[in-house]
Length: 124
Image (cartoon, rainbow, N blue to C red; front, top):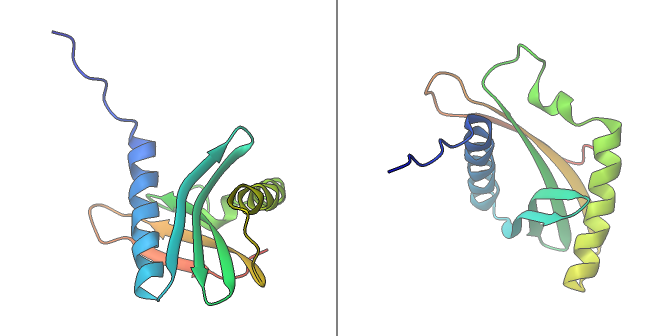
């Protein structure tokens, strides 16, 4: 009987970071509207709402800072792509918001310790 393929460790790490950040937002009183919303052009990690603001959060999770801080991976090109995806999400949901905000969540997971989460609000 063939073995089941092993899960991609990067995907597992990323998913765990997104889960931790979603819980962080929920504890702060946000409502999670969508997770991993995908279209051909890309993916939105988390879409949240607080009061009259819809927040699009890009989550970056790393095991260390050897390649820089996780948030540094959100380049100008990535920001532009996320803005376009946010417009697509709003159109697909047929919704409007008084305010839109783009956050970046940086998650560091080191050797089995609890993840260290830093949410940078209104990053771009």
